[in-house]
Length: 247
Image (tube, rainbow, N blue to C red; front, side):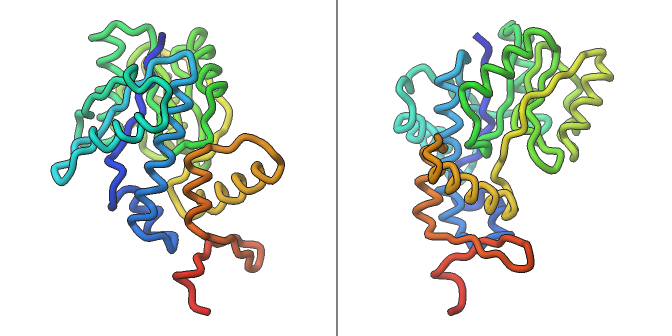
């Protein structure tokens, strides 16, 4: 089976700084949301026809592996089947590149995929669909809004240096083309990394729940606990919290 590496930071305060800077959420609440998203992504990978690798960034002030293992133990049916390895590299692109290249060349995987833990709407069907495309194309990208990607799958390595420079979907495509590789794309899927992302995700979760459709279980529960509301002003949505806004 293909290995899917979920590239995680420690689910602790300080994670997702852009989200913290653009919402009224506290750092603790954002850490809880990040942990919930990780749990949903882990579960999506486990239910797919892929092996789950939790590829975590070392943290001198804590123990990210223990924290991530606790998340996986609670979220997965078979947590013993998960691999845990530390990331190596000074940049995100470098860490993805080291992980993918190691899987393809040192472990002789036929293909490997890097997935963002901030894509809680990712489903088993999405992952399996990306993997099916990867049988026919050398590189398969899962696009998100604003030129980002939530997944990048490879059957051959590329030059990963600065390969995630925005817009990542275009830069990764260019690097694949430079290596003589063909590229295909999966469906658009939401990520939650900024305040704008969060308002859209909250609206989507509540709409899907109202319609009786599946929602990312852990993320939806966390969003419900935040006691947040969406406020429309002049056509723009913003997130408000009763305990942080003035009466």
